[in-house]
Amino acid sequence: MSTDSGPVGKAVYLQSNEHENSVISITIGHDGKLYGGMTTSTGGMGGAGIDGTTNKPAGPDALSSQGSVVVKDNYLFAVNAGSNTVSMFKIDGINAADLSMIGNPSAVPGDFPVTVAASVKRSLVCVGYTGKMAGVSCAPFTHEGLGPMKQVLDFDLDQTTPPVGPTNTVAEVFFTADDSRLITTVKGDPTTNNTGFISVLPFKDSCSCALQGHDVRTSPPGTAVLFGSVNIPDTSDLFVTDASFGTTILDLHPNTDSVSLLHKTVITGQKATCWAAYSEARNSVFVTDAGRDRLIEIGAHDSKIMSTLDLKNGDPGLTDVKVSGRFVYALSPGNGTTPAAITVVDSFQGQEIQHFQLEKLGGSKRAQGMAILQW
Image (cartoon, helix red, strand yellow):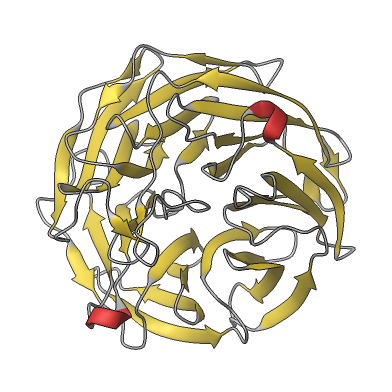
């Protein structure tokens, strides 16, 4: 279904991330609002990192990552942090909230997987993990399911399982827009003078799904806790949040695979700006803050703040976020006292149009991830 501001999605997906993990799928109506909802077991276990401040299981932001659930074509992939696996689903062609798991969850050769990326062009799925054995593994996939996972990157983070965070952990793994490189953001820890970095792992050629044997790691000056990312269309630039101050735009050099800082935006009053989603309808990026109940919109090319929307729905903060057409979907896992919910915002009107609570679908303060199936 399309509007004058672009297509409206079919369904939104996240994971409960509970001990018995499940994918929560909710139908998107033609008006952009959420309706109904279903839960489908992943066959794996969710998990929670250890909050370095309280020394207790983290929540909200139990995985401290972006991309724990992704959709590519009619397939959905979700990590299971507690059982070191990744699950693959087929999305029903008529009812997009209806998922069917393909095969069994595939074992990841690492600890505490928190983020997953998929490339249809290369028929490849890659998973980032951030426990005692941290790194990235990839596997081929077909309509019959996932192949065996093979480790392609090793990160020496000196972590535990579950990891102590949110700093000093893997934040996101994703493919560049042209599928030529695999990018991983790894958060540093300013309190220990540990600088985060961007890992760029190129493919050997345009046809092979095989990755190069080594990556290029860059710590752009002025950054510290690099987190959620989006590819900026028609460029090689990356929009990456930094939880220590706001957002950046980074230039990915095609010849060296290193990155450099183009723009840095300090967000006044921010607590932890971590998640980002691109809006084609507005050529902007919406970012969320785990400690603030507000959406900030930033120009995709000039990094200037375009709008700020303070929400009044009682959420303690927002985590994962996605955009479809004119509508923004932002998850608040709550904090155990306030319920988990998804706020739907009409970005053209600059106002909230729905506050969809997730408790009836098994959503709690451990909920994580956000993906959308488009028309």
